[in-house]
Length: 78
Image 1 (tube, rainbow, N blue to C red):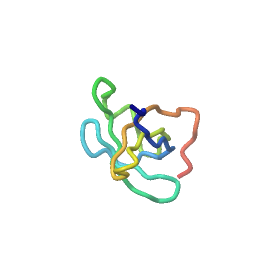
Image 2: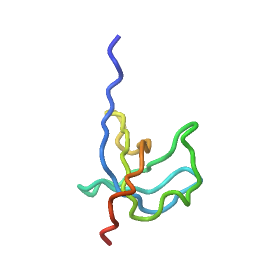
Image 3: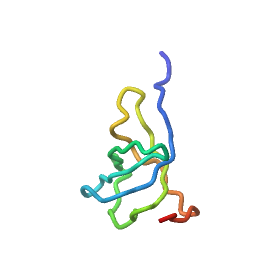
Image 4: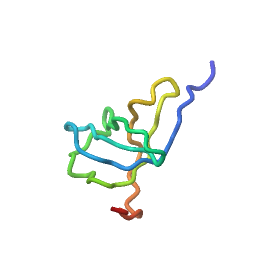
């Protein structure tokens, strides 16, 4: 069987929605829900408004994505 294909993109965190869910936006303006899944769940204080992250999307549903890693080296532009 073929390996499952996913899309990995850079995004910026917006507001905290829940314990492990965040409002996020891509560079092109697409808004979606970003979340930590499974054992990756962390406290919402780990991600602040404007934090850059990499997000994993399914090619079938671009309305939600799983946060892969945080990019602490990037600065907030706002």
